[in-house]
Length: 109
Image (tube, rainbow, N blue to C red):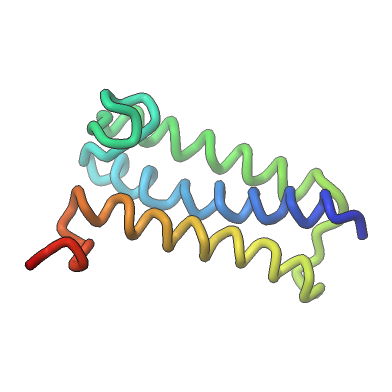
């Protein structure tokens, strides 16, 4: 298995899980940070922008996971690559967005 397939699936996992907060925020009518906000990643974008951004993330994840190499849900290496991408973007997002939404308790006295 080429290592570039594993990299694509890692990035696909990160993009796939990144779709979740944007779709949830958009579907519930709440603003949330996107790269299109001012400042990028810090300001809030509308619910509509979040739905579009989340859907775009799903399309990119689909292309990376299903059309690069031969992803197999039963292959440990494939799942590890996908899962690590998901885990690392989750940890990054928790730290980054926690400071905006009160979830980063390390900055409180």
